[in-house]
Every structure is written in C-alpha cells, then in structure tokens.
Image (spheres, rainbow, N blue to C red):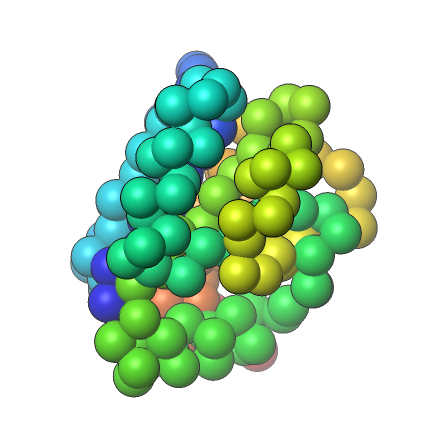
Length: 142
C-alpha cells in the first residue's frame, strides 16, 4: 500500500517542520509520499493521474468523521486489499467543485474549520497514530 498526502498549498515554518516529523514517523509503517502543489489547473490534472492508481479521499469539514480506531481500521482494510490511498488537503479557500467531484470519499478532521496548515499537521499526527495502531505500536493509548 502506498499513501500519498496531497496538500494544495505550501506548508511554512513550524507547521511544516512538525507535519514533516509526523509524516517521517508514519513512513516507518507505510510507504508515504507527501506532495505540495499550488491549487490550480495543474493540481486537478495531477489528481486525475493519481486517481487512476489510488483511492482519492478529500479531507473536508463536511466529510465523515472517524475516531483513531476507525481510521486505523480503514487503513488496515486498504492495506489488506492492496489499495493505494491519496489524501487531499485543500487550499485556504476550500475545494473547487471539480475537485470534489473527483473524490471517492471524504473524511473530516473536525467539525471546526481548520486553517489548511493546521489541518495538514492534525492529519499528519492522525495518520501516524492510526498507522501505529495497525502496527501494534504503543503510541496510541485507550
């Protein structure tokens, strides 16, 4: 299973260093690729290519809410089915309808609206936590 995290903007400063630290940790449990790109026509074309090879999941406040265990189960099922996953974190102004129409599904990180940089950091930690649950690593505590 390959997991791509597609950020439709650039991370800066402390958000960048913290998110990259969690992505680095998550990479010990899965083949992970982190992609930053400006939200423009090129982003849609890149997502179309990625969709051919993987399940496309938007991180959107209106998406399905999962807890850490549920997200871990989702990841484990994808792994068992040899599915590749692409998670997309939108730009500051949210997703354009044409991007929403590409998605296979969407998940919510919170009912709160989060700045895209904060959303990237929250998702990086959530991904690491859920992958550690799948791997039986003691990071997560109930």
